[in-house]
Structure formats: C-alpha cells, structure tokens
Length: 115
Length: 112
Image (cartoon, rainbow over all chains, first blue to last red):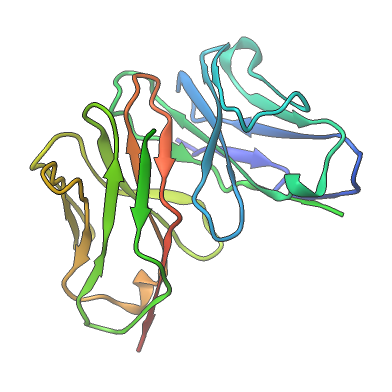
C-alpha cells in the first residue's frame, strides 16, 4: 500500500492556459473522488468515479473542467482556460468501494496557482 | 441540503490541556460522521469515525460521540501534545456513493 499519489504537487500557470492533474489511487480501490480546497475552507466535492464510470459531478465542476479514469486505474482532472478563481488545492481520494462507510484515503494534493 | 458547522479557530492551548472542537450537522437521513486531521504540509488523514447514533469513535486519544438528538459530533482529547497542532475537519457522508461534506476546519495550536 503506497498510498494515493498526485502529480504535480504544485502548478503555476497563467490565466487562460490549460492544466492537467493526475491521481494514482491505492491499488484495487474502486472508488475515486476529486475535491477542491480553497484557503481556510474544507474540501468541496467535485466528482466521483466507480471504476471507470463517472457517476456524479458537482455543480462546482463547470464546463471547463473534465475528469477521466480510463481503465479504472489512475484519473486525470483537466481545467481548460484557467481563471484566477481556479486557484486552489485539488485533492484526490480513493476507497475500496466495498461499503458506504468505506474510509476515503486522501493524496497530498496539487496546489494550483493561476496568475 | 446537508451541512457541517465547526467552531472557528484558531484554538490555542497549552500542552496537556483539554481540547474540545464543536461540530454540528444538518442532514437528511442518517449520515456517517468523520473527523479528519491535516498536519502541516501533509494530506488529510482520517482520525476517527462513527456510523450510527450513540457510536463513539476513538483514535490516538481523541474521542467523538455521534449524538443524533443534538446533531453533534464534538471532538475531545484529554491532554493535548504539541504534535496535535493541526487543522481538524468534521465531515459527514449520506449517500451510497460516499462523497464527503466537510466543515470549514478548525486550526489547533498547542504550545509547550
């Protein structure tokens, strides 16, 4: 068990550029979640995958955001035409998917700064 | 909709003091309740959880009891250490897909 990993850890970009983040969940975890955390706030849910299927998207996930989880393993979160309001920590979490009460294990996050 | 309210921080206390962080929630149905901790420079870690009314979660000297009648899940520790300095998040989960809803977090600073 190597834990949830995220790459990159930090990303600085200019407004209008596209960025892509990667999340590698714990091996054999079926569920994968993306959250966004802004300074001084708790994480907010963005989207959720059960294996390769994206089953729920938050209203926070505008059309500029897209997430994928090909083959039910790693996941990517892409933000197109970034805006300064996208600056935040993007967190990935995974869980076994065996029960509603599964523990979610979080990665270290990717901190995005949009200039 | 569902929501979680935590006491505002920072909470500053001396080593060996008693810690309480209040958490109340609003939810439809019967949520599971969680406390996560974020140490400086690290990711979120599950501290403890409770899945039904009157359950008590405990870990590392921390405890919290699921009180349905007061819709609360207050976190307590009898004697804090400097190493307990962190941000603590209360969270709930209601749906079968398991997304978490977090409070705003409470920063705890423990001084020697």
